[in-house]
Image (cartoon, rainbow, N blue to C red; front, side, top):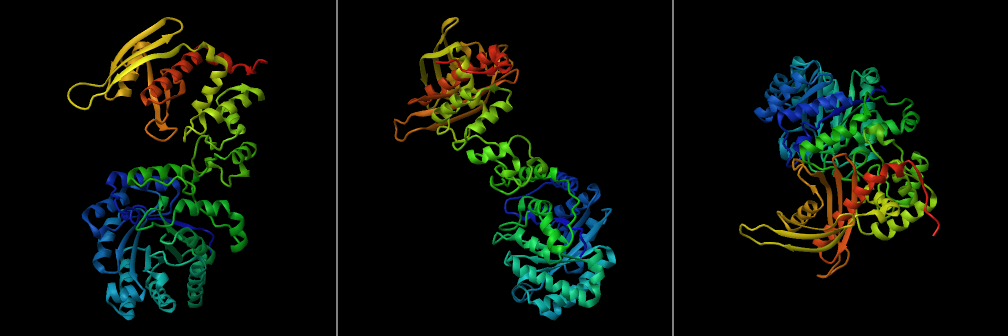
Length: 546
């Protein structure tokens, strides 16, 4: 079989049919161009007959998106095919994709036609499409629930009428890998017996597959089809589409790339792809952004956790050698940054790795103390542990005696309605300049308290104030215990104008006071780091003997 695998993307057609998704023209064009950058061979731009908007979208994509074949979908009738051609003919490489159902259940209940009538419509549709466009794809809708011998008859009619790509869709996600393999193998053998073996080998005739994910098998079925002789794979970015979606193209791409050894052994050749895999994550995020369909964190390849490691054992392995727990280099698919995620299961190696990657040098005794404090003060408190919190522990070990600020007293008044705003009065002990008192108004009690604390210490959350500017990067509140008297914990991350970030945790039965304590902790660390941080980073830190 021909080793070149054609990737057919239907994100802009089948993907947009996902409930709640509506892409505008600009978004479609941008996604289309991103698909070309990824290396997609065929882009199904839409179903032009369905609406004037869809017609214009296909027409615009055909004109503006260069570097891939642009396909338009059409039912097996003259009107659909005419409209599809009018939309797609502006492409440098146009394709008409026409289809009709072949399963008895569709023939009886949807089409209300006989098998003979469908054979006739198939021939007419493909011949008419071929008279307009040299590149014609024919799909036998609901192929996997069709009678195999009848399906083969339809396929042969379409090929003889001029179709150069024959698609065998698993329209309702019904088949399973071995069954699908057998079906594709059956059709390949039928075509070879009819004299099309050379066309299949050279790629002049291709068998394509379009799998839905109703049973969670879309990708597995697609891979089985390749092993059986399919040389075009249809799918979408992130696997979006009708119902449970389509085969996720990014997964198929990386299966073929990562397991070249397996396909070489099974097929006798390595399936070739013309793909820039580093574009996978960017286009995944683009499609997610425009469709509003969030990628589940544990989604293969493009999920936020796909290459994230929190377990201490896994983190240790990754730090020693990436391949211990990763079969793909995250950078290869477009991920950036560290795959080590700090959490309650993280160990010493991960803590040390994170701090050393931020420029700190220290001996084992320091790491042991940091990890002890991490275990007792942070890991069971925060679900998401940013690096700044661990760096804060290190700063505490060497700079805590120099911290300036502590909370003396606070009074915060909230209001339920009317023109009055929440009010806060804060008294802070400054070891260098004595006690400071200030007031603040805000949209809520914590906002008022933060403005009062910042005012007392000469800071401001307003960049135009002329005071020392700080930005609140992250803010979280949670309860450590149950009941109405639960102890609350607040975590904050702040950033100064130089881009230096520090974090602070505060605990108290009053969540507003916990929030103030967290802010003061972060400010203490910020000022201490500004004064001594760079000096410490140039040392190999070691604790004095106690």
